Amino acid sequence: MIFMKTIHRPPQPTSCRKVTQIAVLLWQRCVYSFISCFFVFSAFAEEGKKALKPTAMEQFFPWILLGAFFYFILIRPQQKKSKSHSQFLTNLKRGDEVLTASGIFGSIEGITDQFVILEVAENVRIRVMKTQIASYTKSLENTEKSDTQKNQR
Figure 1 (tube, one colour):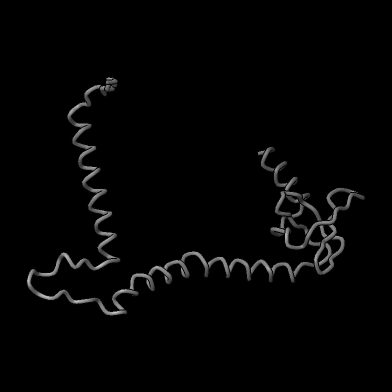
Figure 2 (figure 1 turned 135 degrees about the horizontal axis):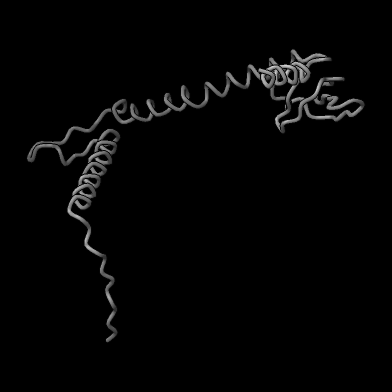
């Protein structure tokens, strides 16, 4: 027979034990409340009486609420953002100063349906996908001027 050593934890202070017990009880109540929102337990029915079955609407109502939550919190804002970005891309024109998703500043020298040619320095041009243009930027010269003005103050 093999005897295993039991690992003894050092005793916790009484206040720590109480906090832990309270946290466990609160967690159990939260889980129970969440589960009871989605399911109707027949255990709550009185003994001797036939338990009422929930209607189809009562069964699917929590799922409808969950779907509405996901639509208004996740899907709809993403659709709005996508729509505004596509509108931004259609309004791009030659000479606009933009920032790419990878952090490259440049001014637009040419535009096609899928690609944009950016001039990032004098006589240095790169071709990037149009969808990777993140936003407009202020002129780099204006930014440098404002930085020097701040440093002079």
